[in-house]
Length: 295
Ligand code: DGL
Image (cartoon, rainbow, N blue to C red; front, top):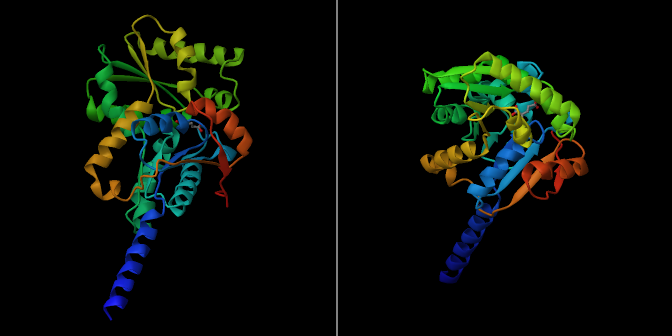
């Protein structure tokens, strides 16, 4: 009898360990490669967690697509990440954060009825950007979708009502970067055009926010066209610090995330292309697998 009880307990402990050993990674999503610049900062700050990155390269870029389409693609991708075991998904894409996050948080997640969460990159960035500007004039460069959503002017106004925000849509940059043409003459032409148009809106701008996770790859090109004293801010470290803060405040979520220090990469398109281009964004070699997200 005693022996059977001990055997039963051992089996229960073994089963519990099995459940615990199932990876519950943090999901990181972008329309393509851009989110890898954010993932890089997050993994650097918190290497202990398991991560699963998904790039929807087959349908990128999202920047010029409608609200409904960006929401549909993003929600499909988020559900795929949930099905892979991610309890928390970061939309490391400004366009998806601007056009899909609110609907996902307010409408889609409550219907699922679980405790999974989805966070974006706009609010954490807007909450800190005011700290960088002395002139109280900030320029925002982003996709047409992010700029036309007015998400940044609205979010920055919440935290910094005195800051003037000028926005510049840069529709040609993501297609150029996604195609590995960021150092080409064509890219140089558009980078100069967009930065000049932005600075012409407000000569007091002293801080330019790269409100697209693809743009850190061209930050050095943008800086070439700026007068002395104008700084360029990328989002990676801001989002990483904000996520660390979130997990510190939400023990119930932090405890669900597994700590195997693994990094998995998935794309909805060709994996060898993803490995080749993606490593430039991530700053290290990566090996991706195909993600069967598309219906
Ligand atoms: N990295 C995405 C962003 O931050 C690019 C969007 C796109 O696919 O056009 O907005």
